[in-house]
Length: 83
Figure (spheres, rainbow, N blue to C red):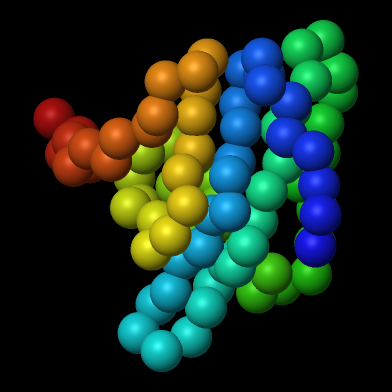
C-alpha cells in the first residue's frame, strides 16, 4: 500500500499497528489530516476505530508505528482517575 503523508499536518499517523494478544486490532494504518479539512473516521465494527482514537489520545501504546500531533510524537501517559 502506497500513500503520501502530508509533512505539515496537525495529525499524522505513520504505519500504526496495535496487536492485542495474537490478533491485530489495527495494522499498517497511515494518514494525515489536512489543515482546515473536515475528516471522518468510519468503518465496520471491529475495524480498529476505537483503537486508533485511543492511540491518538496517548492512552494506548501502539505495537508499531507512530502518531504525531503538530510535529511532536504522541507519548502514552497513564490515565488519570476521576476525583
